[in-house]
Image (cartoon, rainbow, N blue to C red; front, side, top):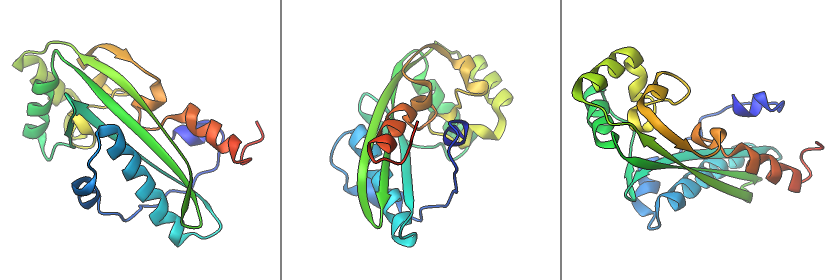
Amino acid sequence: MLIEAAGLPVETEAPGVDERAIKAVVRGGPDDLARRLAAEKALAASRRRPGRVVLGADQVLAIDREVLHKPEDREAARMQIARLAGRTHTLHAAFAIAFDGEVRREGRDSAQLTMRRLDHQAIARYLHLAGDAVTTSVGGYQLEGAGIHLFERVEGDHSTILGLPLIALLASLRSLDLLAI
């Protein structure tokens, strides 16, 4: 959606990588994990699409350097939101551009989000409002939707918060002479 809004043609494809296996071997911090996931996704698709420009991207949520994952169900989402309530967490977003099985450019950015203090009733109302969407994104929220109600402060680029450091991506595409604008 972000790339299309920037006027670029897009084809999407599932990368077919085992994210859990990648997470198990990355020894750096959350930003390194986001970078590695993006690179592995780009490489996997690039090997299947020779001669094509392939973009891989990923986002990791961390609180106190601990990585949180997508909640498996509404109860897990409730627990994550309760844990994040009243605290600041970081979203680390990364991308990798690959051609013919080789990463040519990478980029990443981070944003800090502070959730407002929430009591159990506020969390329950949010879960009711957001519905099953709470299991589709890390942290149990989508800032571009009902999740905005949870926050008191957001610091960082909007596209990074949505999962793709778009300004850095466009600069990388220009540096590879893939954009004329």
